[in-house]
Length: 64
Image 1: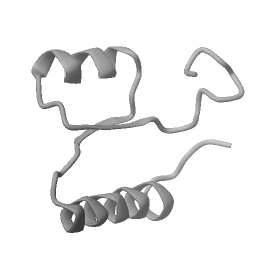
Image 2 (image 1 turned 30 degrees about the horizontal axis):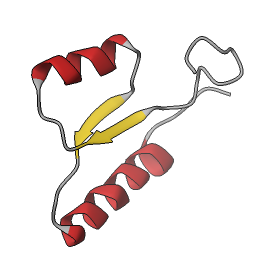
Image 3 (image 1 turned 30 degrees about the vertical axis):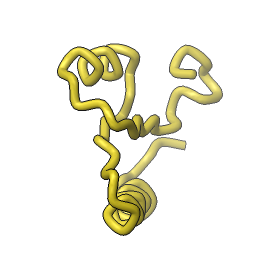
């Protein structure tokens, strides 16, 4: 995705249950915009998704 000029500016949010340092480092090496450990609790998961949405769609200035 990051190698395609038409898609390169789209933020990539990795949401996973993994907390391993190797997975985190691997995703950033692949140009992920952020790495989020997914909460197991559904209510907390919804809260995290809302916060991610708020951040990327109301706080961040993206090109183009």
